[in-house]
Image (cartoon, rainbow, N blue to C red; front, side):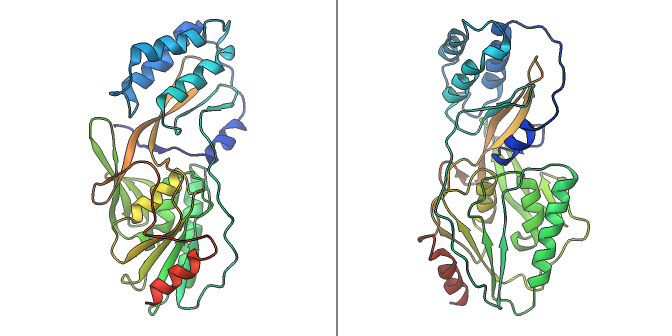
Length: 317
C-alpha cells in the first residue's frame, strides 16, 4: 500500500455529497465503465484472492446490460459493492451521490453521567472532515485533555459510544496524549503487508509520516493512569480503529457492547467519469499484530446504563 490509508467512514458521505458539482467530459460506454470499476476491485480489494472474478464481472455487466448511460448504472455499482461482502467500500459519483451497500448500526443512547473529580473523561465524536479542520479537531481534544489533567488523576475514560466513524487520523492525533507514543496498530493488506499507525509528538502517524499534526501537543502529567474505553454497537469504522489502537495498551480495558464490525482501511480510485471509489484494501491489526475482523468484543460486556459506572469502578479498584 503506497498511499496513505483512508479510514472508511460514514460521516464523510454527507460531506462529500454536498460538494459542488464539477463537469467532466470523458465519453465511456457503460461496459467500459463497469469493467474499470471491477478492475480496480480485482486488483486492490482486501478479498481479491477469494472472489471468483469471472462470475463477479459477468454478474455486474449483466445487471448493467440495459443501462444506456453511466448514470443509469447505479444498480450495477450497488451489486458490485454487495458482492465484495465488506460493507465498507462505497462510491461517490461525479454529482456527489453516495452509492453504498451497508446497513446502519445503532444502539441505546447512553445516559447522562457525573464525572468524578479524580477521573478524566473524553468523548470522541463522529468527525468526517479533512485538512485544516482535522487539525483543529485534534487541537480541541488536546485542550479538553489538558484542562482535566493533574498529577494525581486515577485514570481516563475514553468514550467511543455513538461514534459512527470519520477521520481516524484526526481522532488519533486528538486522543494521542492518552493513547501514548509509538505504534498503536497496523493496516494489513491481502498480501499480508503491514503499515503501522500510531502517535508521535502530537501527530497521527502512518508508518514514519505525520498525517494530522497538533501544533502544541499536551503531555500527560502521569503516564501510569488507567484507561477505560467505552464502546457500543454504534461504534463504527474509524471509531473501531481507535478502539483497536487502545487494544493491548497496558492498564487499559474496554466496557460496553460489541461494535458494528466495520473497521478497515480504504484507498481511493478515480473512475473515467469523475466518480471516486473508496475501496477496502486492508484490515486493521492491534499493536501486537493481531488482526481484528468483524465486531470488537469488549473486555467487560455491560448495558448502556452501567458501562460508565463499571469503568469508574475498575479505575478505582
